[in-house]
Amino acid sequence: MTTTHVNVALGASSYPILIGSALLGAPATYAQAARGAQALIVTNTTVGPLYAQALAAALVPHHAQVRTLALPDGEQYKNWETLNLVFDELLAHGGDRKTTLYALGGGVVGDMAGFAAACFMRGVPFVQVPTTLLAQVDSSVGGKTAINHPLGKNMVGAFYQPKLVVCDLDVLKTLPARELSAGLAEVIKYGPIHDMAFFDWIEAHIDALRTLEPAALAHAVQRCCEIKAEVVGQDERESGLRAILNFGHTFGHAIEAGMGYGAWLHGEGVGAGMVMAAELSRELGLVDAAFVERLTRLIGRAGLPVRGPVLDAADNAGRYLALMRVDKKAEAGEIRFVLIDGPGRAVVRPAPDALVRQVIDRCCA
Ligand code: NAD
Ligand code: GLY
Image (tube, rainbow, N blue to C red):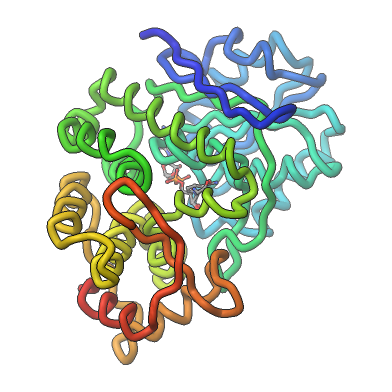
């Protein structure tokens, strides 16, 4: 398989995304990005045993010292306490301003290692080596880094760009099926918000993606990275356009926080959340029922939930609304939703609470 390069064009902070096979363990992959005498691979207790040794061997030609830190695995550990383990490790072993952090794992590791890199000595270089589909098509690209707060998802963080993103498709072979489906939620989202031709393609190739057919995977990761790079290149800090990448996330984040981090996977929340956001778009007259049905069918075929959970038996919609008011897109307590304004086009706007309540009542199991 040939390696594809997608550029994230951000002036002096531009960087390449490499997509292909046998990249993770090849020293040449890191030649342009590796800096400093020391490297710290930040991974977790699941991914570390699978891939850290191969990555470390590939980094030895570039750094005099290569260390590995395995964090506990899970969304529930995406917090201050775990983040501090990275600083403990760096300070205990003489980390300096040129120490490069390598984030080896899914979005949880990527977001935390990226945030650690943004903070340590006010910023050290970092490289994303995403090992989940979700991280390859979304979280490793664009420089959003964060940890969760008990009251809200990704509430504490920084915009901080990596020097390089390495999407080695081979690592997806060890990914559990449920995690692959979670990644497909972020693949699917790019269709309704930006590219319906890609949506058509996903519909035709969803089974090939679920069985990890190499050409289908390579195309999906490349197209998602191209779209994300285009959006981030226009609006790095989400002053406007970038918010469209959060389609389904306002409802999804409420599900994740409301169920307790880790109970529903991020992609599962986004799956059910996209159905709710599409339903809300229909209620507002922006799309028709056929579009909502088509999107719902594809989300189901990806192995994702199409209905949200009940977060509060007494007042479910009220609980969703309370959680959504701490969404980062909210302004003065008013929730702003990413809605589909005709297939392939997204808009960010508020919606009347009464309508949102109706949608939640209809879309939750
Ligand atoms: P994750 O990082 O928790 O990884 C999922 C699970 O798969 C974990 O148990 C992990 O150990 C395991 N795993 C990872 N790679 C594996 C492999 N190759 N083989 C076997 N097991 C593997 O979850 P995720 O879905 O990758 O990421 C979700 C996180 O990403 C959320 O915290 C979300 O907020 C964040 N996110 C961030 C952005 C962003 O722009 N920064 C975008 C989307 C999502
Ligand atoms: N995943 C949303 C963003 O990067 O903006």
